[in-house]
Length: 165
Image (cartoon, helix red, strand yellow):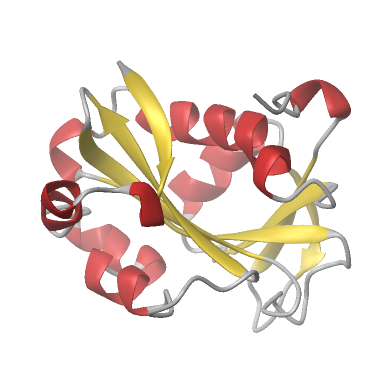
């Protein structure tokens, strides 16, 4: 079974397994490593940031961060959530897990943050594989975020919102 799980819902074993996620060396300058991503999460839950792990058979294989107001990036539009540090473990890259992360995220985000109307991210123009990946998944380029980084946007529709259980 494959599912997206909020970081705070991971058990102790899954949190330990999450630390083993490694990206390819050429991806590190763009995504950072898992320790950097986890360092961004506050010790106590904060309404402006959430971490999500992609679990396959209850084992973490990918991780990402989402931020919104009041921690929203200065280049992002109001009503947005920004995607940061999407990392798929190097041993399972190329199996469509990045696509699954984004699909599940667009289904789940409005369950957690119903006021979010779009996702945004910044990507280096030098990270051509990531730029091509996001554009192929329906994101559109909307100018510069900062320091030459490209600003990408993915509008969310009510159809993408997962009904509350």
